[in-house]
Length: 231
Image (cartoon, rainbow, N blue to C red):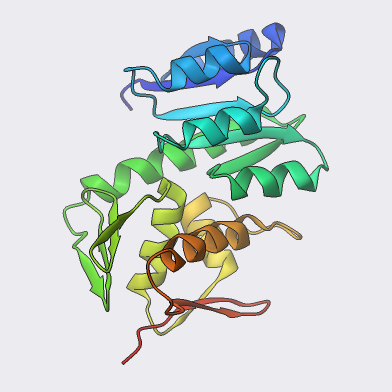
C-alpha cells in the first residue's frame, strides 16, 4: 500500500504521538493539528488528505464546527472520535456528514480497521474497471467520478453515502439488510443500537429530496432498505 495521507485533529499531544508511532509503520503519513482552527485550515488547504481523524472536543473550534465548515467545500472522508456512550455526538456527527465514528477510549486495532475500511472504499469505486454508470429513472450514479446526478443536477455525497446508494441501486427492487450495508460499506458487522447506516440513508434521502419528491429508498423496519424504481 502506498503511503496514505491522514490528518489527525486532536488536542491530546501524548495521544497523537502514540497514534503516529502506531500508524506510521502501517503506511500512513500523519499531519497533526491540536485545535479546531488549525485543523480546519489544514483540511481545506491545497494538500489532499485520504482521511481526517477528528476529535469532538477541541479548543477554538469543536469537532462539529470543523466538520460543518469543512463540508461546505470538501468531501474528504472523516472519522470522528466521540465520547464513549455519548449517542448524541455519534448521531450529530453522522448527520453533519462524518463517514464513521469511533468512541474513546478505543482499541488501536479497531482504529486501524476503521481507517483501512474507509481508505479501501475510496480506492475501490473509482479504480474498478467493472464499475459502470448506473442510471435508474432520474438518478445517475458514476463510480469512476464518484458523482451522482438527479434530474440533471449534481448532488454532493460523502464517500460513505455514495457507497450505500451505489449498493442499493445495484440491488434495486430487492431488500438490502442493514447488516449487509454495514459489512460491505463500513467494513464491520452491525452492532446492537448502531444507527450509522440509518443516519447515512437519512442523509441520502435528504439530498435527493432537494431535487425530487419521489421516494427512492423505502424502509423495511428492522430489516433494511429497498431502492425503488417507479414506472
